[in-house]
Amino acid sequence: MRNSPLVLSVITLLIFLSGCALGPHPQNTAEFRKALPDSMFGKKETFFVKRNIKQVANSFKKMAPKCLRKRVTSTSSGYMHYQVVVTDYNPSVVLRKNHVELALQQDHIQGVMNVTKKPRGGYYMLVTDAFRAGKNKTKIDMYYASVGSDSIVKAIKGWANGKKGCPDMTKL
Amino acid sequence: MNNKIFFVFSFLLLLTGCSNLKTYPNDLTKNVFVKAKIESGVKARVDIFEVNKKCEGEYVGTVKLDETNKNIGLKKSKLSYLDFRFISSGFFSSSTSSSGLSTLIKPRKGYHYDVSVSYEDNIYDVEIREKRRKRKKGRELKIIPLYECRQFR
Image (cartoon, rainbow over all chains, first blue to last red; front, top):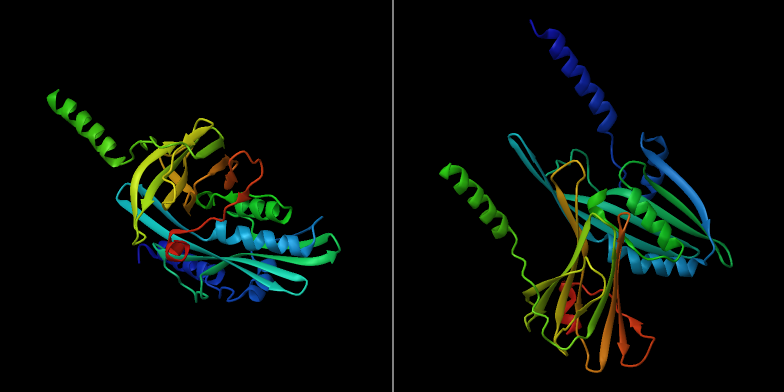
């Protein structure tokens, strides 16, 4: 009982963590869009590009599989520990009438314990919608975590504007 | 003292043993012309493999792309696999990371290949253009992963 304040602190922390972090993860892009504004690090960004929806769709179709379908292995080591995390990144591009959806999922193959239900293909980390907004104008909505998505967001913005270039997936 | 020298020697051996890279012989007629624009702190290279009929790659060698304009000779009408790598080191840590992309390529007779490679601000690009001799324009080649080898042959 001498350690009761410590035990209590640990229990409180666990309750806090379980309440904060163990909520269900979005199982599809619609749930991801809905859940993101309420999350601590979620961000939605909207902008317009001077290209038609077909051009944007072609850029996404070309660049997403080329750049985002990757397996990344990261290792970290220190005193008495050595950890290897293997993550597969799975992009998808869905074409609809006047709407293109680009989604990116991350699937931890090794080194990470999945404590909530994982959607097929991995947890969603980014969704980008492109909507026709005129003859040569497209509206882009991006939903992503404000931490650790910088290079991916920058690359996708570039694709929407007709640029090329792949994000370094080891720098997330 | 001897122990110290042995330790240092062993460590150096370990370091050299860890790196299995060898320089690409590059003794064939040059048909691939690489222009690289790489930011400082990042090292770029292309590992070159020859691909056999079973779609297995055999490592032939590496060309460092840290300097601009490298001319490479690949076997004509034979399948090769080019693995472009960008290696950067952490600023405050000893960790290194490697990213990049790889593609199959089958150089054709009478054609050459202009490759532009860039890495800047965590964004990289590799573009390969196939051009007929004396013609300025060419076509951009699609990146073809190794698992598509059988369809590509």
